[in-house]
Length: 139
Image (cartoon, rainbow, N blue to C red; front, side, top):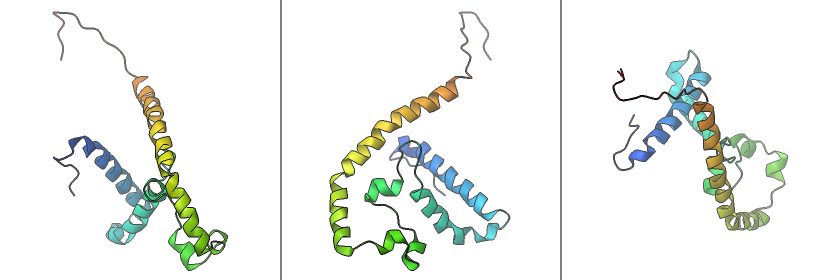
């Protein structure tokens, strides 16, 4: 599996982080049944893309497609959410959602620095500052 790219090296850590989450979820889902990894991968990927993230407060699916997720089970067995929808009004609602997509993405963009500061604060609280002077031996 290729986890880095020479074209966009700044994205390497993001890709590795995302891959780590997917692999950990696969391990939790499969347990001792490691031979079924390929069969369970679509479900784990679907769960990853439709779960809201703490950093943005949105699902990756909603940031890209500007729509709420309908899980495959709801298509086969209609629920109140899917059976009430009228195809004509659905198209109108999607058009309205396209108008607000930038606002949704801006909210996610503004939320990210706050999240990053919180994570940095949690990481840095255990760091001790050490001052070195000329002549100090440093390993």
